[in-house]
Image (cartoon, rainbow, N blue to C red; front, side, top):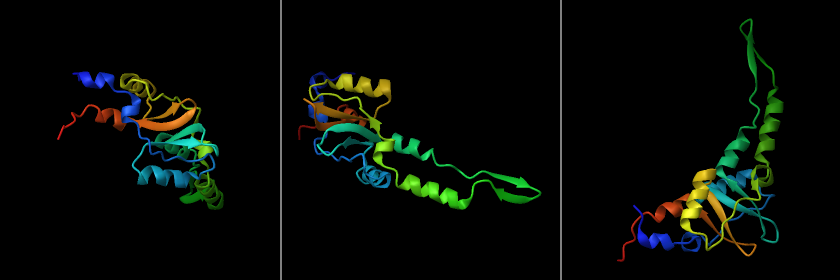
Length: 160
């Protein structure tokens, strides 16, 4: 069932304008904390001039963790022999902890404009499995829209 007033809703009506951003140099650990503490799925990545250069989502962070080499073991005559030394494993763990946003982000993300219709944004999210889309106006990052923002439009507003 479609509510008539929602047909007129645009991204500007539901987007988050108070942006949390990270730079490409931000450490993954810090970016992950930001996402968790603010209960957000993604964060725009901006350069030193504030220009949008990418987006970092929870799915990017999860994919990054898959790169962790797990030590291989095999049993020989009831003895456990490590194929990867623990020292090398620890080095890899530290490397991942120091990994920057630039290595995990999605560069040149799909963006929408403030006057984009809600239906178009919803279709982009569903078709591309996006949870968060940056909002850009005349080359400037002005907001971000997430799946939760779209879902909130389905809840009837009380005029109280």
